[in-house]
Image (cartoon, rainbow, N blue to C red; front, side):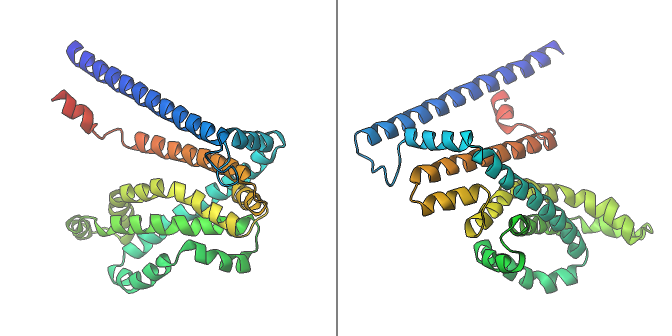
Length: 275
């Protein structure tokens, strides 16, 4: 028992040291790149009108932090992203199970669903502006549509891959359609649906930003488009940094969800080192 605990603790220490080394390497790489960038700007090797210096970007970022624009616009984008994600994820799961239960219906609808999915979401944005205006609701709808198809196709694939022998056995035992749905299809396909949900979280942010870039007077996308219209490249880069941080936070949430839902999985790298 003590030997097993010692081995587990040893693997944890190895993993912790590995993570520290990776973090240090990333930090050094970041400092080197930013340093060379600043030096190149100071020596006029980089055109400041095209690519501003890190100090200019930092000053622009500090400006929107101090005047409150950052918090205001970032909060708008976060609301659009979360609302669009929830609507799209729930809708995708419901549609996936509803259509997946009837293979014939799924075959009939497949080409139409794929045709709609193939339309770039940027092309839908002007139409959504006409339908829903330029307010926050349009961005929520665009984010929801972006998420819906990802979750829907994953859920549908999960329903289609349910063991048919198990379904037939449940039918033979006298189960009702509701029993088949909630006791066989949902438990079997839910892992597929959750995979779609995890994948789609960053895409909700993409949908919201596309809507803000097309037509908006609020949000991070608006900051980007307004700065670009004023030829303020430092302001564009500052807004992009904020957007990058938001994306990183969303990815961190996705990783944490994946870690909590995948505790049962074996760490392949640890297993290989341990053999």
